[in-house]
Image (cartoon, rainbow, N blue to C red; front, side, top):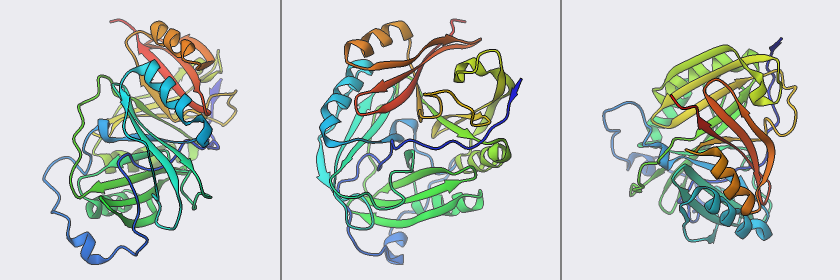
Length: 312
Protein backbone atom coordinates (compact mmCIF):
# COMPACT_ATOMS: atom_id res chain seq x y z
CA UNK A 1 0.00 0.00 0.00
CA UNK A 2 1.45 3.35 -1.01
CA UNK A 3 1.59 6.01 1.71
CA UNK A 4 0.62 9.37 0.22
CA UNK A 5 1.98 12.40 2.05
CA UNK A 6 0.53 15.20 3.86
CA UNK A 7 2.22 17.96 5.74
CA UNK A 8 2.93 17.31 9.40
CA UNK A 9 2.72 19.61 12.35
CA UNK A 10 6.18 20.39 13.64
CA UNK A 11 7.42 20.21 17.20
CA UNK A 12 9.07 23.08 18.83
CA UNK A 13 12.77 22.18 18.53
CA UNK A 14 13.88 25.51 17.22
CA UNK A 15 15.84 28.53 17.87
CA UNK A 16 18.74 30.39 16.57
CA UNK A 17 21.91 29.73 14.87
CA UNK A 18 24.81 28.71 16.87
CA UNK A 19 26.99 31.70 17.54
CA UNK A 20 24.44 34.41 18.19
CA UNK A 21 24.96 36.33 21.33
CA UNK A 22 22.63 39.33 21.17
CA UNK A 23 20.65 41.32 18.66
CA UNK A 24 20.75 45.02 17.96
CA UNK A 25 17.16 46.20 17.89
CA UNK A 26 17.61 48.37 14.84
CA UNK A 27 16.62 47.96 11.20
CA UNK A 28 19.22 46.43 8.89
CA UNK A 29 20.47 49.15 6.58
CA UNK A 30 21.57 48.74 2.99
CA UNK A 31 25.05 49.86 4.02
CA UNK A 32 25.36 46.91 6.41
CA UNK A 33 24.56 44.48 3.62
CA UNK A 34 26.94 46.22 1.23
CA UNK A 35 29.71 45.82 3.79
CA UNK A 36 29.86 42.11 3.07
CA UNK A 37 32.51 40.77 0.76
CA UNK A 38 31.51 39.60 -2.68
CA UNK A 39 30.63 35.90 -2.61
CA UNK A 40 33.59 33.69 -3.36
CA UNK A 41 33.41 31.55 -6.48
CA UNK A 42 32.22 28.03 -5.81
CA UNK A 43 29.13 25.86 -5.41
CA UNK A 44 26.61 28.18 -3.79
CA UNK A 45 26.57 29.79 -0.36
CA UNK A 46 26.98 26.72 1.88
CA UNK A 47 30.00 26.51 4.20
CA UNK A 48 29.85 23.01 5.68
CA UNK A 49 27.66 20.62 7.64
CA UNK A 50 29.60 21.23 10.87
CA UNK A 51 28.16 24.79 10.91
CA UNK A 52 24.53 23.76 10.44
CA UNK A 53 22.64 23.32 13.70
CA UNK A 54 19.35 21.85 14.80
CA UNK A 55 17.34 24.39 16.82
CA UNK A 56 15.85 23.09 20.06
CA UNK A 57 13.56 24.98 22.43
CA UNK A 58 13.19 23.75 26.01
CA UNK A 59 12.25 25.12 29.41
CA UNK A 60 15.12 26.39 31.55
CA UNK A 61 14.83 23.62 34.12
CA UNK A 62 15.62 20.96 31.50
CA UNK A 63 18.73 22.66 30.13
CA UNK A 64 21.42 20.71 32.00
CA UNK A 65 19.70 17.36 31.58
CA UNK A 66 19.34 17.80 27.81
CA UNK A 67 22.87 19.02 27.20
CA UNK A 68 24.48 16.43 29.48
CA UNK A 69 22.52 13.53 28.01
CA UNK A 70 23.23 14.60 24.43
CA UNK A 71 26.98 14.79 25.07
CA UNK A 72 26.94 11.49 26.98
CA UNK A 73 25.22 9.84 24.01
CA UNK A 74 27.25 11.27 21.14
CA UNK A 75 30.43 12.77 22.63
CA UNK A 76 31.67 16.30 22.06
CA UNK A 77 31.21 19.23 24.40
CA UNK A 78 28.96 22.24 24.97
CA UNK A 79 30.12 25.79 24.44
CA UNK A 80 29.55 28.51 27.02
CA UNK A 81 25.94 29.15 27.98
CA UNK A 82 24.74 32.74 27.80
CA UNK A 83 21.64 34.89 28.10
CA UNK A 84 20.95 37.14 25.15
CA UNK A 85 18.45 38.55 22.69
CA UNK A 86 18.53 36.63 19.41
CA UNK A 87 15.53 37.99 17.49
CA UNK A 88 14.92 41.28 15.63
CA UNK A 89 12.37 42.34 18.27
CA UNK A 90 12.96 42.37 22.05
CA UNK A 91 13.32 38.97 23.71
CA UNK A 92 15.61 37.12 26.10
CA UNK A 93 16.77 33.53 26.06
CA UNK A 94 19.35 31.24 27.57
CA UNK A 95 21.40 29.91 24.67
CA UNK A 96 24.03 27.21 24.35
CA UNK A 97 25.55 25.51 21.30
CA UNK A 98 26.51 21.85 21.71
CA UNK A 99 29.25 20.58 19.40
CA UNK A 100 29.40 16.82 18.80
CA UNK A 101 31.08 14.58 16.19
CA UNK A 102 27.66 13.78 14.69
CA UNK A 103 26.15 17.25 14.46
CA UNK A 104 25.61 20.62 16.07
CA UNK A 105 22.77 21.50 18.43
CA UNK A 106 21.58 25.00 19.34
CA UNK A 107 19.60 24.92 22.59
CA UNK A 108 17.34 27.77 23.73
CA UNK A 109 15.27 28.35 26.85
CA UNK A 110 13.31 31.58 26.49
CA UNK A 111 12.71 33.83 29.48
CA UNK A 112 10.23 35.95 27.52
CA UNK A 113 7.49 35.10 25.03
CA UNK A 114 9.02 33.97 21.73
CA UNK A 115 8.51 36.48 18.88
CA UNK A 116 6.79 35.01 15.82
CA UNK A 117 7.87 33.07 13.75
CA UNK A 118 10.85 32.01 15.85
CA UNK A 119 10.27 28.59 17.31
CA UNK A 120 9.19 27.25 13.94
CA UNK A 121 12.48 27.11 12.02
CA UNK A 122 14.21 23.75 12.20
CA UNK A 123 17.84 24.60 11.48
CA UNK A 124 20.41 27.36 11.22
CA UNK A 125 22.61 27.27 8.09
CA UNK A 126 25.83 29.28 7.91
CA UNK A 127 26.19 30.99 4.53
CA UNK A 128 29.12 32.72 2.86
CA UNK A 129 27.11 35.82 1.90
CA UNK A 130 23.67 36.84 3.10
CA UNK A 131 22.82 38.99 0.10
CA UNK A 132 23.55 36.11 -2.26
CA UNK A 133 21.80 33.59 -0.02
CA UNK A 134 18.59 35.62 -0.01
CA UNK A 135 18.81 36.14 -3.76
CA UNK A 136 19.40 32.42 -4.35
CA UNK A 137 16.63 31.37 -1.97
CA UNK A 138 14.05 33.60 -3.65
CA UNK A 139 15.17 32.46 -7.11
CA UNK A 140 14.73 28.85 -5.98
CA UNK A 141 11.16 29.43 -4.78
CA UNK A 142 11.61 30.12 -1.06
CA UNK A 143 9.82 32.90 0.84
CA UNK A 144 11.83 35.20 3.09
CA UNK A 145 9.58 35.28 6.16
CA UNK A 146 12.04 37.17 8.38
CA UNK A 147 14.00 39.74 6.41
CA UNK A 148 17.72 40.01 7.21
CA UNK A 149 18.47 41.60 10.58
CA UNK A 150 21.69 42.43 12.35
CA UNK A 151 23.24 40.93 15.47
CA UNK A 152 26.60 41.89 17.02
CA UNK A 153 28.57 39.36 14.96
CA UNK A 154 26.63 39.06 11.72
CA UNK A 155 23.30 38.93 9.91
CA UNK A 156 20.37 36.50 10.05
CA UNK A 157 17.16 35.71 8.16
CA UNK A 158 14.46 33.02 8.08
CA UNK A 159 13.20 31.42 4.87
CA UNK A 160 10.34 29.03 4.10
CA UNK A 161 10.21 26.38 1.36
CA UNK A 162 7.20 24.83 -0.37
CA UNK A 163 5.63 22.42 2.11
CA UNK A 164 6.12 24.84 5.00
CA UNK A 165 9.76 23.90 5.75
CA UNK A 166 11.38 26.81 7.62
CA UNK A 167 15.13 27.34 7.94
CA UNK A 168 17.28 30.09 9.41
CA UNK A 169 20.30 31.50 7.56
CA UNK A 170 23.18 33.23 9.32
CA UNK A 171 26.37 35.03 8.30
CA UNK A 172 29.28 36.27 10.44
CA UNK A 173 31.56 39.27 10.12
CA UNK A 174 34.39 36.95 11.26
CA UNK A 175 33.86 33.40 9.94
CA UNK A 176 33.85 30.68 12.63
CA UNK A 177 36.08 27.62 12.35
CA UNK A 178 34.97 24.13 13.43
CA UNK A 179 36.41 20.71 12.73
CA UNK A 180 34.61 18.55 10.16
CA UNK A 181 32.05 16.11 11.52
CA UNK A 182 32.80 12.40 11.82
CA UNK A 183 29.41 11.61 10.30
CA UNK A 184 26.91 13.88 8.54
CA UNK A 185 23.40 14.02 10.06
CA UNK A 186 20.18 13.92 8.03
CA UNK A 187 17.86 16.91 7.98
CA UNK A 188 14.59 14.92 8.10
CA UNK A 189 11.86 16.77 6.22
CA UNK A 190 8.26 15.50 6.15
CA UNK A 191 6.23 16.89 3.25
CA UNK A 192 3.04 16.12 1.37
CA UNK A 193 2.99 14.54 -2.09
CA UNK A 194 1.66 17.76 -3.53
CA UNK A 195 4.73 19.75 -2.41
CA UNK A 196 7.50 17.15 -2.38
CA UNK A 197 8.78 17.81 -5.90
CA UNK A 198 8.54 21.58 -5.41
CA UNK A 199 10.54 21.38 -2.20
CA UNK A 200 13.19 19.11 -3.69
CA UNK A 201 13.54 21.17 -6.87
CA UNK A 202 13.92 24.43 -4.95
CA UNK A 203 16.20 23.17 -2.18
CA UNK A 204 18.52 21.34 -4.57
CA UNK A 205 18.86 24.51 -6.66
CA UNK A 206 19.56 26.67 -3.60
CA UNK A 207 22.00 24.22 -1.99
CA UNK A 208 23.76 23.32 -5.25
CA UNK A 209 23.05 19.75 -4.19
CA UNK A 210 21.94 16.60 -5.94
CA UNK A 211 19.36 13.88 -5.43
CA UNK A 212 21.23 10.65 -4.67
CA UNK A 213 18.13 8.47 -4.24
CA UNK A 214 14.40 8.74 -4.96
CA UNK A 215 12.79 5.51 -3.76
CA UNK A 216 9.06 5.49 -4.46
CA UNK A 217 8.62 2.18 -2.65
CA UNK A 218 10.80 2.59 0.43
CA UNK A 219 10.04 0.43 3.46
CA UNK A 220 7.50 2.41 5.51
CA UNK A 221 8.39 0.35 8.57
CA UNK A 222 11.12 2.92 9.15
CA UNK A 223 8.38 5.49 9.85
CA UNK A 224 6.25 3.11 11.90
CA UNK A 225 4.09 1.64 9.09
CA UNK A 226 5.37 -1.88 8.66
CA UNK A 227 4.18 -3.77 5.61
CA UNK A 228 3.64 -0.58 3.58
CA UNK A 229 5.75 1.58 1.29
CA UNK A 230 6.30 5.31 0.89
CA UNK A 231 8.43 7.72 -1.11
CA UNK A 232 11.79 8.67 0.36
CA UNK A 233 14.15 11.13 -1.32
CA UNK A 234 17.77 11.64 -0.27
CA UNK A 235 19.71 14.82 -1.11
CA UNK A 236 23.35 15.66 -0.49
CA UNK A 237 25.03 19.07 -0.58
CA UNK A 238 27.65 21.11 1.25
CA UNK A 239 24.86 21.92 3.75
CA UNK A 240 24.82 18.21 4.63
CA UNK A 241 22.28 15.45 4.03
CA UNK A 242 18.55 15.98 3.62
CA UNK A 243 16.06 13.12 3.77
CA UNK A 244 12.63 13.98 2.40
CA UNK A 245 9.86 11.74 3.74
CA UNK A 246 6.73 11.94 1.62
CA UNK A 247 3.73 10.70 3.63
CA UNK A 248 -0.02 11.04 3.96
CA UNK A 249 0.41 12.36 7.51
CA UNK A 250 -1.01 9.15 9.04
CA UNK A 251 2.03 8.73 11.23
CA UNK A 252 2.15 6.79 14.50
CA UNK A 253 3.89 8.59 17.34
CA UNK A 254 6.74 9.62 17.48
CA UNK A 255 7.36 9.75 13.72
CA UNK A 256 7.20 13.25 12.27
CA UNK A 257 8.37 14.87 15.51
CA UNK A 258 12.07 14.29 14.80
CA UNK A 259 13.93 16.98 12.87
CA UNK A 260 17.37 15.38 12.62
CA UNK A 261 18.77 11.90 12.10
CA UNK A 262 22.23 11.21 13.56
CA UNK A 263 24.51 8.59 12.02
CA UNK A 264 26.59 6.53 14.45
CA UNK A 265 28.99 3.62 13.94
CA UNK A 266 27.38 1.27 16.46
CA UNK A 267 23.68 1.84 17.12
CA UNK A 268 23.49 -0.70 19.96
CA UNK A 269 26.35 0.90 21.87
CA UNK A 270 24.87 4.36 21.29
CA UNK A 271 21.48 3.28 22.62
CA UNK A 272 23.15 1.85 25.72
CA UNK A 273 24.85 5.20 26.35
CA UNK A 274 21.59 7.02 25.76
CA UNK A 275 19.61 4.89 28.21
CA UNK A 276 22.31 5.30 30.86
CA UNK A 277 22.04 9.08 30.39
CA UNK A 278 18.26 9.14 30.92
CA UNK A 279 17.21 9.17 27.26
CA UNK A 280 13.99 7.37 26.29
CA UNK A 281 13.83 4.99 23.32
CA UNK A 282 10.50 5.88 21.71
CA UNK A 283 10.82 3.54 18.74
CA UNK A 284 12.88 0.35 18.96
CA UNK A 285 15.57 -0.33 16.34
CA UNK A 286 14.15 -1.21 12.92
CA UNK A 287 16.34 -2.63 10.15
CA UNK A 288 15.87 -1.80 6.47
CA UNK A 289 18.02 -2.74 3.49
CA UNK A 290 20.71 -0.13 4.18
CA UNK A 291 20.44 0.90 7.84
CA UNK A 292 19.07 0.25 11.31
CA UNK A 293 17.14 3.15 12.82
CA UNK A 294 15.61 4.13 16.17
CA UNK A 295 13.87 7.21 17.62
CA UNK A 296 15.01 8.76 20.92
CA UNK A 297 13.63 11.43 23.24
CA UNK A 298 16.13 13.47 25.23
CA UNK A 299 15.26 15.23 28.49
CA UNK A 300 13.30 18.37 27.72
CA UNK A 301 11.42 16.68 24.87
CA UNK A 302 13.95 16.82 22.02
CA UNK A 303 13.14 13.93 19.66
CA UNK A 304 15.78 12.64 17.24
CA UNK A 305 16.37 9.73 14.90
CA UNK A 306 19.61 7.72 15.27
CA UNK A 307 20.89 5.19 12.76
CA UNK A 308 23.85 3.08 11.75
CA UNK A 309 24.48 1.97 8.19
CA UNK A 310 24.48 -1.66 7.12
CA UNK A 311 27.91 -3.22 6.64
CA UNK A 312 28.96 -3.44 3.01
